[in-house]
Length: 157
Length: 157
DNA sequence: TATTGTTATACTCTATAACTATA
DNA sequence: TATAGTTATAGAGTATAACAATA
Image 1 (cartoon, rainbow over the protein chains, first blue to last red):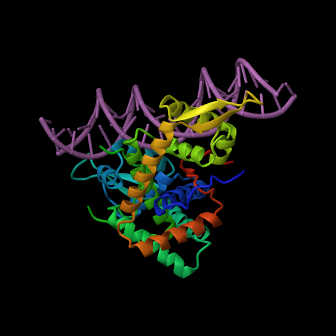
Image 2: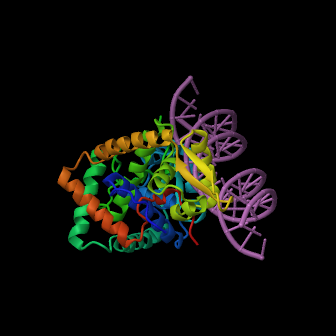
Image 3: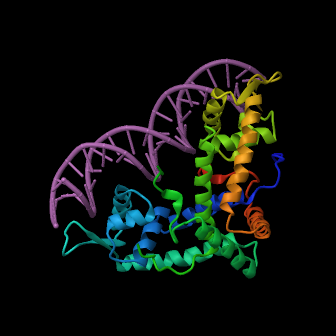
């Protein structure tokens, strides 16, 4: 019942704490679309740069190629993406969204906006921009890849 | 190689992205102390409120009691915590840090400060306070428990 | 021989459920 | 009968490694 009586948290802990909360809430929301966060990430990636190979996407997302196969299998099975076999090199599969995939992506973006609004309900619009600006600068300085969530990443070294 | 060409990220995504990065970096750091993030969380919890039972700690951290047993076993084996059997009710184990545990906790706090500095290297001191303030307000409004990282949480509903 | 994608396997983390000892 | 802690088990998520097809 009683608090832990600790000193005020540093920025790093707060970022990790609120970040994990945000990721969890987002996962709950996209579950209503029948998607998992890794699937959403892959969908967004393909939408932003259609035609890329699985190896390329795996490298960009920082996951192992076999992981992309697994995620892609579920998206493929749901009819949201297609793997088009390369004409010049038949080993390559060019990744594209289907019409259904584009539709789901739009719903997902709408949901993401609602998620954003809920999470930032404590802030006024100006503060929200301020927060995003500060975080973006940290992201840049830390060398994070834009649009890539490190949550489902390959272990380092 | 090319970016994904997406629109600028919303605050929620940035929080989750930078938060996951921060958690990952922190995990790498405490690994040098031979600790995992859940172990660190439990250490901090016991330090902040010594003598609590395992059930009480489990409820506060939002994890299942058997999870506390597992984390506690490793901390116990490392000689950082002790379970003192309750005098009035012998089912209760009152949790306390050992001298070694207090020592490790101090090292951990030093390490946390360095982590904080590294993560916020892009910001000046004033901006850092500003960021922490904005995040704290979100944490409060979202009902997050102070000092509890939701990363290793019980699944909801 | 090297590369793309795939399959098979193992490992880690966490929760659920059954169990024990106390109350 | 109920509660604190424990043990046993299972599931989800992810990586590693072996493999097949193609270059």
